[in-house]
Length: 214
Image (cartoon, rainbow, N blue to C red; front, side, top):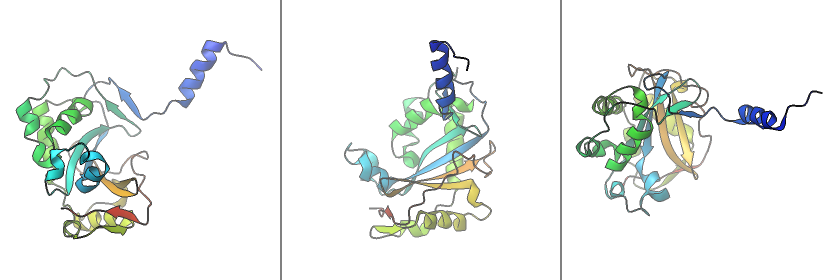
């Protein structure tokens, strides 16, 4: 057996074991597709938003825009080195109607939006257009009490409300036993496309908690 010098041995181990989840500082505009992430506001509030006294939790919100994320077929870029001007306070505040808070809009731009290769104004306009194009299941808005249900039921509701979507274009995520997010994969032209293997993994809970809109 041929032994590697210790520094090379550790370097090889790190290369083999490091996840390909994200790449910081990549070139903006170089990605494969978008993930449109919609967060169920009652879940976010229950798991931390209320404790932080977020103004989002004072509003009767259901699905809100978490973000529009540039994505590779495996992994995603983040914190790209972009020459684009950061959004103004007015631009981030204008997104609070669909994102819950101005702070989330700023954070999403800083981490994900800069990687889209667009100006802040165009990125937020694209995110708003993607959000508006999704039919969010009305049945979930009519809940008047907490329910437990299979996560698959939520996915099926989205697929029924959006004819033309296929199961591999959408994933439902859970956190702490609750329905957390619905994530739709979109082309750069905002057409639904199959998700990469690291995105398409669905929550498999059979009794996920879904709180009603208050």
